[in-house]
Length: 473
Length: 160
Image (tube, rainbow over all chains, first blue to last red):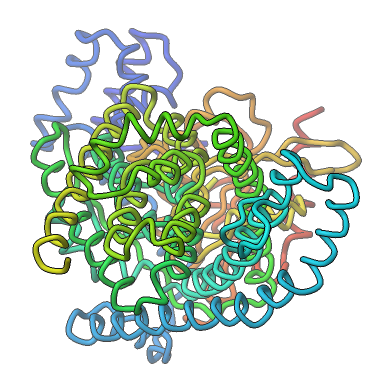
């Protein structure tokens, strides 16, 4: 039993069916605009069959089919459902209010500011009051006992617990910094971030935020829904990159991915930035974010003009506000934490082992020397800054952490650290993100995207150095 | 299969016990998730497809859903629809039922529909479309047993 279309369309379907021997459903999909099936029908047969319908309706056949199907669907729905009128509920009223720019925008600003404040306070609390005392207390005693019992000194000793006397962020041993950075600093931030994100998601606030930012995103050729990959990327770029599949055109996906790589720091990185730059004042951290936002918008509009391709509009569906369920919140946060631990810790270890090996073999000295001119003249950074830049290819949190010893030993001053942090955010996604980039964009797209990132990173780095040396130094 | 944000992942989670990320906005699932389900003692593969409004997809996630349907041998489609938005959701249903693949229509979120004063006559809808229709509230688990039963019946019938 199938649902019939109007006689002219049915005649066209029969006509094609007779001449091409395709089953009805393939013909229907072809008429509705499926290119794969359309190709199977010879052009002449196709034209002959549909010309009458198109002439009759004065529109492409796809549109006629669309209207017909919607008509059928609507008619059936009306026949089987009864709708009783009633007053809108509180949640529905709230749902309407929060997308109106005049009220919605201030609410959005308040929510986002509240979220940021809560994020740094809660994550900072866990790190300072729980993690640090634990790592510097019982954990430290235990690990020293364990390692020094077996390897009193030498390469393996240094590899495992790092430089004696240095703090947990600077010693660069696998078991000291390698555990402290992901668990002590990043994990609390990841945990708090994902609890907040999950709440906002489940309540249904994110799509409303998408509508509010739609105007801004439109300027750069993306639509409001692009806010979702952006927000996910603040957690971790990997799911953010995956979420770009909801965008409609290749151009939009390429732009979005490049922008994510350039200007969105993940939680791991944010946490370490707060550790390194935070003590100099929160204003500096906010300045980094403002710089990144500016880059996002400028690069976006440049790419939008420079790239070929379309940026179609879409209609956004807004889900209703729903009360979040604790069980879903816990399950989802748990899943995300697990993903983080599985993805991050191995790379942190690889990063730290690499730093130690390069250092022991003396390769870093060589690298420092050849990169010296670029680092020094253009970016105003000391030769040693090449370390974090290399490790930044693997893990951004470890790389940013590497700046601490440079700051503490006065090899680098605060302004140089600002330049280095900003470049680290921009110049290259971490190894895990790079893999999903390859998957989503292919080799050619990834190279193109990476090139743009490098240009922007060193451009902005040079500019910052120039500004700092004019006004601050 | 079904439109975005109708609760496909919750149904998948209920049927298989596999934990998946579920959010209140369209586009949470962009990749396929495969799981297995035991119906009447027989192990079957079940796939959670990304949401799509139509078999003529407009984005990559929807395209993937359609490709899967056309490539793999499918015994049964569970078409999850949002009961509060029946008219728009039935669009895909109408396309799906042309495919000669057995179909179950799952009216999800009937609790929300009830709250909004929407009453759906299930027998009438089943008669109109000539497919089995069940209603569920996926997040609380209501109706999942009936959905399993309906799936088992169809699969058994087709084996004969």
